[in-house]
Image (cartoon, rainbow, N blue to C red; front, side):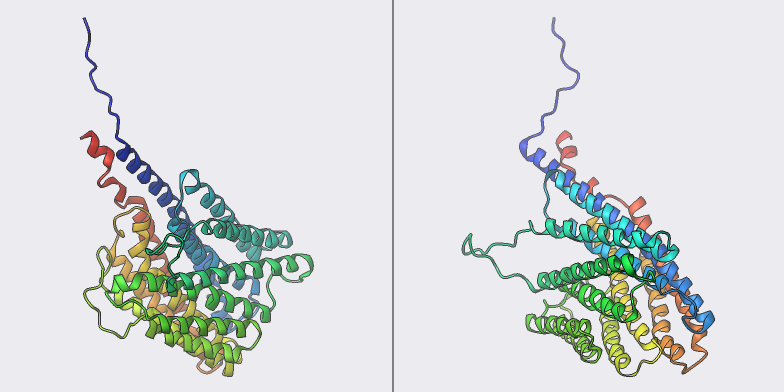
Length: 451
């Protein structure tokens, strides 16, 4: 007498096993990207914006920098540029790279631990000064090694081959050139930071960069790193998202050349020609991305607020404002107010607004989630950020340059609005990752095969 098994074992076919392997790799890459994004949101909200808000309150109360340590300002800026923007870009970069087997998470995880630890130690050393002579070089070393690992992983990313022959390679697209220039800017900034942190640790009297050196460092970070990267991603994504034509290659190359020349002049210590070149590059990139042309269709705003296209265009209006105000600062600034307003227009008006606008469109998709948690929260965060940035950029020159005393009372209001926008954005993204509907639950081939 024989017994029949209750369940016949299921043996998936080779194609199903391959699909399951692809899904498993994508899940691991998405989880790794979520870690990068979560880290970036943490540094954006707490060590970055909250510290910047407290610094602004102290400056407004004393009608100037007063006794505020320069290290606190650098701690705020480092958390924003490296901890927030840097984490987002490195995370998206790793996600975009093809990977197989354990390399899907092993190398990105090592890079993530080094990068997050380095940024956290730098912030701690700047704010509290505990063993800062050791922490500054160690933190900078961690960040340098993390960028080297990222570049090592990116070196295995092959360019597409031409259809006419296996040996010939198609020319690199202009958006990739822009991202590579920005990556080179990041590497230069990290090396710059490491060398100076080692010098401070060995012979520095303060735990902050000298003012003149810090100005050159900010040029590399802003116009050498953030600007080309944002231009590259804009050229890659905006034609599809906004239903506009592809960027003009000639104008795009001109903008990159103007920006690169401006960075060279800025690092060389010639701010006037550098700022003129930055202003010209900001205008040129607008022509390159064809914002003035009429859309060919409707913008792709599925899952996000329909005001998306308006805020994307405001991003590049802020870039022109940042470039124009930098020219004004190079010729007329006396107390740092115009320089500060120009940098704020670049970092908040340009970079942060781009993240707040395009982040809800791409980050949930990359992280394996179908859509953002709330469209209304997306709009509210952008409105708070824009209003606060407008008040800050317009009132800071008036206050610092002693033109209008009432402007000192406007600065705290601008800080509160920007902080509110950042916290709303952080909450919206956190809720998206915690309770958002996973995209991997749809069309799972294993479930279809069992069914």
